Image 1 (cartoon, rainbow, N blue to C red):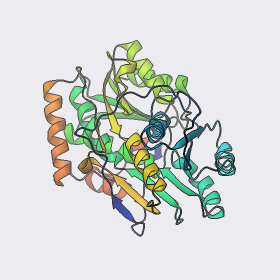
Image 2: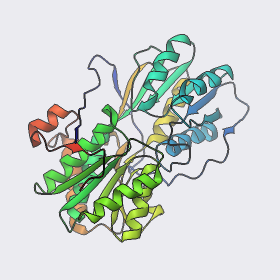
Image 3: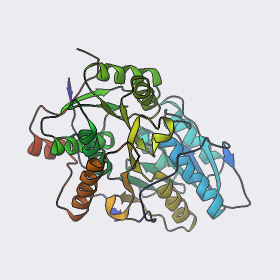
Length: 356
């Protein structure tokens, strides 16, 4: 077992609250990218560098590209994505985008922090943004979400919908941003059912569909009947396993019920596409500032997806939890210290091998 540790982003970082707009925290299922680049008559160009999950992960990268496409359609911005197959591609893709004259480069995910830390200071006239992370440079904007809040809500739903009192979590990796998902899920489930058993597995891979399926099948074989996946393309295997076994899965980023309507009971939503659109617009208007922009329940930028599989009792419980988070009555832990203070030490662990 490996104990997870998480740390709050430095309080010295600039925090600015932004609005995602709209009446509900929902987003359409992402479509496959129509093209690697979309060009119109425009002097402003924005590029996106994917993480290793790839452009077709139906999650993190797909939603970011959907935001880029909105920027193309609504703002007339030239957009292009650069797909990363390995970690070694991150810096190379950024440099290629810079050489091709892109004014804004959006890096999808915390895995690119090291690469961006190297590149951003060398190109002070280029604007950068990174999702779920931050690099302390004046030309870098951090696009951050209260992932613990939407994960808390799906944790409530998992505990409500479980018939066995045993649920699962499959992660693609760890780190400050990823740990927020897990803290929230554990907290929501435990607040709903203090006796619930939670199996958790770190795949250490965001592009291993077979590995995600194997992990979920292992959990289902050990009495879990609901498994939450926060693992990019690896998580697609979790959904495949749920469908195969006739059990439940929980999606992430977008409403993933379209992948298996009979199995996906809900999804933890983060409106990444809207955030990316806003960043593109601010950069084009030369109003984008370095620092952190935070998206949460209060501005309708995170949430959960409703499906017909959810019981009336589960919906009532999650609606109550959401209202209490917004009012401040429920404070979802964001750090290991906060989690341990409320739920105790040794409870929150993550397997890196399928044992038992």
